[in-house]
Length: 530
Image 1 (cartoon, rainbow, N blue to C red):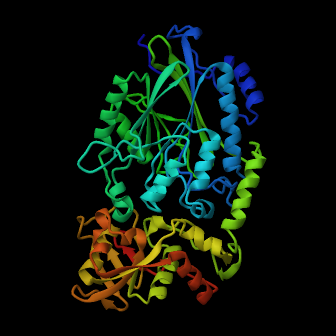
Image 2 (image 1 turned 180 degrees about the vertical axis):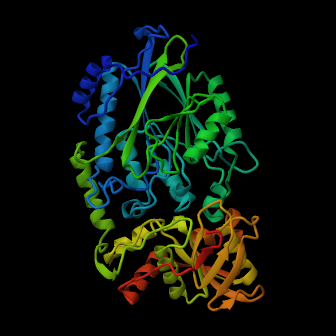
Image 3 (image 1 turned 180 degrees about the horizontal axis):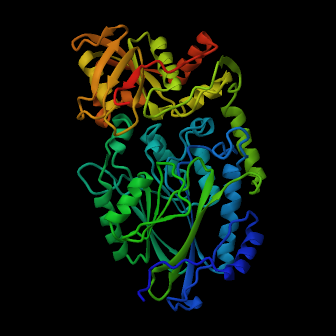
């Protein structure tokens, strides 16, 4: 019988091992023994590597709640103070057993919370240093406050930041503050780790932020990195990727040579790890916002230097199960007091909960774009759906709500655009590549059955049809207004100007003017196929 590469058993033989782990670790992660009976591998010739991983922390170090488990009564999370407990105890266990240990993060580390923004990411780097991470991958939102801020984060880190496909134009070298890969020895095995970011990154960050950098295709660079690391003697190769789970799976099947991919960007709960059918790559991702730590136990033959089995799962950082590092928690609370001063002052109310929807008109989308249009006295407002990060709750509204709705800290950008350019914006909105744009000041109908570039059927601004040659004043956010990639039309208007007024300030102003807020779906965006 042909031996399969990965053999996994849930034998009762594992109960003694599991009991020991629960006693030593104290938060109930089970470790299921891997039996090698079919392979005939002696236990003495097997080495284990504990690989722990996180991704898309977005500054969420402070304890939160697991709202996805119970929206009405969400259980508490321990976040970073609990993650430190998990990491330390598993590192101690690996040391006691003579196992290798590796700790990685796949990027988007700080943007999205008051604490992360207030410290410009330094508080997350402090967490990485305390936890003893071996390497950090770069995410697109790590550029959100500019390349200089990212370079400062790298300089203050005790570990390298990896990304092989961010390169200096006209060369095959990464910029000086990044490294393409890392070769480590753990448990007598040589582990090569290299980083990748989505090649769509050129469309996701402003040119002024990225500077003189370009992003090369993931597949080509992955092939080069795997070949180079194998030549340097790597036994195990780990891809630290920020490209999204479905693309990670595709990359793992298109490029042979990955043993493990630790992914990010899509915030996907991958539990247990996914094993690709052709190349048998183990693909991992641990949700987001430090709600879980990914745990992968690799069993490696010391004779063949190949993975012969594995077990993996997500360790949910539930506050009632995982003890917090109380000294570290007190430190975070002291920073929060400064960063969040005045955040919980009630500034108005909402009649009902206003929900987000990515692929059609939403109540919260109408609320946000109405606030933008009113603040700037524009004819039209446009905002990408995925940039709205929180529903508006029913009842009292605070500055914290406004902050969390616009967690990325966008500013208001205005410009003069022809009717043709406005239509082009709307065509981008419904091209199916990303989520649609939320709008204010206009109504549109469209059909997804029509070819790209001609899906928009009708547009009215105010109560009049859109006129191709007429000039309209449009307000958008600084992400779209940067005009990178397919969003170039936003850059090509006349008198395009960043007001540097935070979008959240316009939201706060709108709440105060219109409380109680009562936004509804009004038929601004209608798909005729439905």
